Length: 163
Image (cartoon, rainbow, N blue to C red):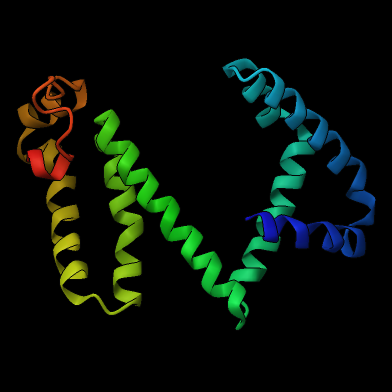
């Protein structure tokens, strides 16, 4: 991601010269967040118009790296899959069922893309079953949503293993 950011700066200078003042303001906002990490400072960055503009431009630049035929496409897909796996780990540690399902949903296309037939087949069935949990088993769904399944004895077991 650092290499992508280094490539983004010359792209900004070349294609979006008028937005360079947004970049300076964004870097200042990020420096402020770095010096005092809290919910208020993070929310301030997310609501800042300059930060949103730069993030949108960076997302466009990242998408252009994904669409190429070079090594950058491979590394961007690697970063995407790593973010999905980090989301799965976070969901397991926090006991967040909705984040777990969202990460599973994002992982399914990668299983098809890399021809992992068994993973693609079983994850699709698992996702469909877990998505129907609120209607088919509302008591179990309520149990998961309140987080009461996270006792000390179960806290280290992944959500799908606990099921």
